[in-house]
Image (cartoon, rainbow, N blue to C red; front, side, top):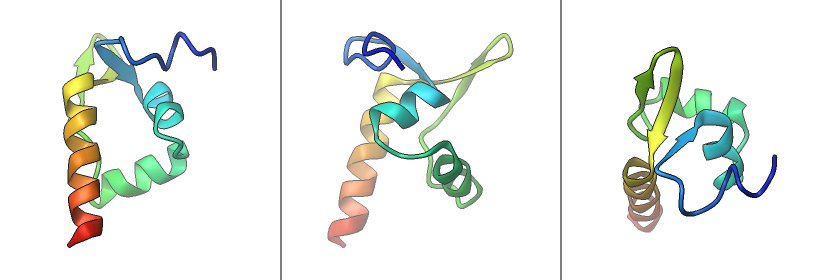
Length: 68
């Protein structure tokens, strides 16, 4: 993936870009999705996206879960 796809200044990530940005595999993403541990997603046409805000909230939740 090119660095422009996973740049900090995007408003929304594809699942692949989100996974690359957060150094997780798509397999782990879908495993966590089944467990209800992924960020909120939204659809634009057939694309599934994750907003920058949802990604940030997910990171905070994961940090807090680790600390608890």
